[in-house]
Length: 562
Image 1 (cartoon, rainbow, N blue to C red):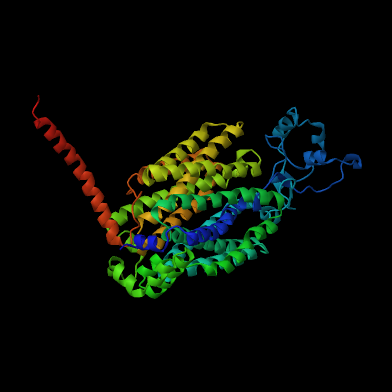
Image 2 (image 1 turned 180 degrees about the horizontal axis):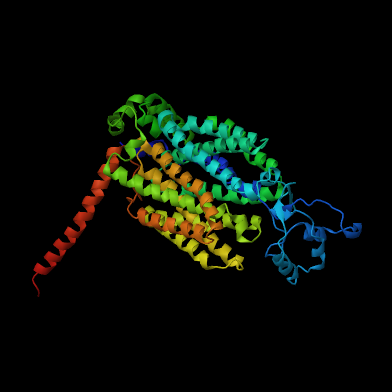
């Protein structure tokens, strides 16, 4: 008896699974908020140097626009420059018209001495009342620190994937998930009280680590407690929770414009998630492969009773598991390491291809969603649309995953996403609506790719290495997310270069995805040997099909004609 058959006996999709998936999905609502939070906590409107008040000719009183005219140079967009000011007020510029170009002509003909903003900056707070960029003046020469903060958060997610992925395979999914909820609650809350940028980055790093622990274990527990036929739907429901969280963030950020209060609003609920997570059941699949049969029997009995099958619970014993889980027990190994992901041919091919897929999906995704202000439209509306597009995108992905397959869905979504991003290079900045529409289409494809790869990865790796494999994939994804903000800085030298890189990466990965094995209607592998044997069976089947066609053609040709 396989574990999948045993799960059917205790109830593979009953009351327990419904409650479990619901409780696991609630924290996911705020996962998007933490990932995209810096769109609002680090947002920045128009700004310019603080203007010194000096007496002008005749001790005249100046309005705001006149004072800016004499104190700050104006750029080609006819706005005050953001990072420079005149060393001395240029009173004669009051006679020059900024609107008809006389100002620029006069400014170009004279070598007016300027200096950096020595007295701080004035910020337009009409949209964002206060962000940490405004509070700590991360502009001009310090503007790269904003992107660094997001990269540090992504580095935390990367490190968390490596650490928590391995720990989950060693100590179980439930314990690491509970700890991740607590770490996210504490580090996210402390972030709101950061006295300076350095402390902020430290606790954002810890928050990113906890993010990985939550995501990895939510996916694995859902996969390991549910049957193959329902996984695409459950994966979509979890994805919809993340999508709803994006929409929730748009409304929450609009209602809570102060960055510290917004940080608290998305962090405090994790204390509640931590408290109720103690009810969670450990993955029985993991317990069996870890040779913890007494604990596995206890959890399976609990699931059977919750699903209304007390008679099945009464028959379950440790001896029953030991006798029916012979294949899983026979392959038990003292420990597994990340090297097992590349030790055998099929595992090596799976790990290499998934590395491309995870990296590029995350790289292009966060290249888009962390740059909402540059689309030239209302940032709240843009995030709302970015979130809403996920609903049809993930619905379509569920249909294609279920009826066409995981492999074609993964490849198609990545290639289409790359093409839409590349198309945006040729759209001028003066057409923000079209640029946003193409970006929304690309983001929808990348969301569908994420929806597929989480499920696909869990099905490709065996139970003994599932969390390690998910951790490796998560590591590659966060490496992509960490690099994405840094690639955006290359736009200061070559404007189209970031979009060129963001678009090419998913196309290459879409091709790599075509080399992965198909897992539709296939039972979860429990051991590495099962992965290798299934791959060999698929090769033998593909080799036999042409031979059978040749035999049929030969038989047809030898039939006597009448």
